[in-house]
Image 1 (cartoon, rainbow, N blue to C red):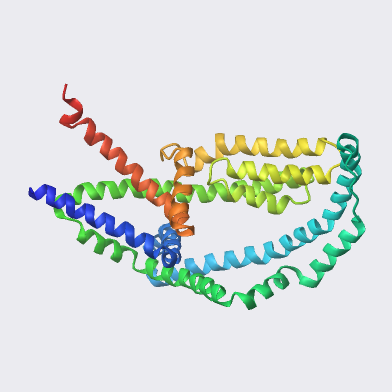
Image 2: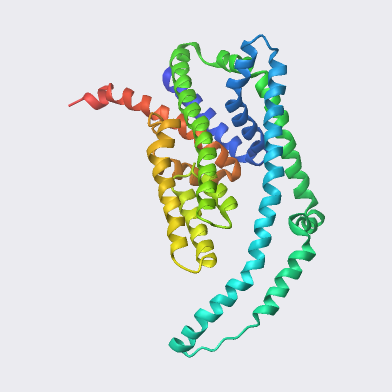
Amino acid sequence: MTPSRFAAVQWLSFAVVAAALLYLLSPILTPFVAAGILAYICNPLVQRLSARKMPRTLAVVLVMGGLLLLSGLLLLIMLPLLEKEVSLFVTRVPDWIEAARVRLLPQLQQWFGVSLEWDSQALKNLLLSHWQSAGGVAGKLLPWLGTGSGAIIGVMVNLLLIPVAMFYLLRDWYALVAQLDELIPRDWHAKVTEIAVEVDRVLAEFLRGQIAVMLLMSAYYVAALWLAGLEFALPIGILAGMLVFVPYLGMILGLSLATLAAVMQFPGFSGVLWVWAAFGAGQLLEGMAVTPWLVGDRIGLHPLAVIFALLAFGQVFGFFGLLLALPMSAILLVALRHGKVWYLASEMYRKP
């Protein structure tokens, strides 16, 4: 075996072992990958603060403190509103069932000769009593806390690991990058550095740009649905906006939920048309203005590639795979670009 083939076999074996370790350790790697993604997103801000003669550790503490404060404020604002919306939904369900009984049952009796009866008031009282006895969202969580304490401890440990790992990654970011740089074979150093810079550009444009798109579209959908008069504008708008990172999923799911809520809320079809107009305008706004402006077309991640990567990595690695999907897709995309250049310049391609 020639030295080049032996080296290729060594690197192939290393890649197989690394992939196997990722698969076996995926349940415990999730908080570290999440911390790495957050650290990657926040590192430019930390670097800006450090460039102004601020100690890096202090800059990290300030950035993480601001992020935690923002997250806490969002939770304090969102949880009461969401609980109010869910309570309203539970209250309205029996009325919707009664409306369906009045409209649907006569049609069933006419078409199929089926006779069905139920006590809508009893159903309403049953739902209300169960919701009130549960004490809202917190009350519903209490039984689960008692029966699934092991799972709860695991979730809490993972949540606590994320800020800890994020702190050390942000503080030692450039030292860790330098250590990785020293491990690269010197013959490959220039090419690996070129690929790493390109991967960094792709990830930076996608992750930071996509987060801005998600926030802007969430604000748009909440405002547009509120102006359309939809009672459940807040949760549906946030859901539709936060899912825009999966192409068309946020629009389809949000439109379906908003249509269902509008049909149940508005007596006529005009209210549904306003909801459809809000989502149609949002889709045009996202596709023609927001995404090209904040993300751009230079990334090269086709929507089908994003969907396939999320499904494939999620199937193999679970939630850890969802976090890993887009970074690995960016690396694969850059590798394929360089592989194509190498292939077109090779004798295999040019040989007649």
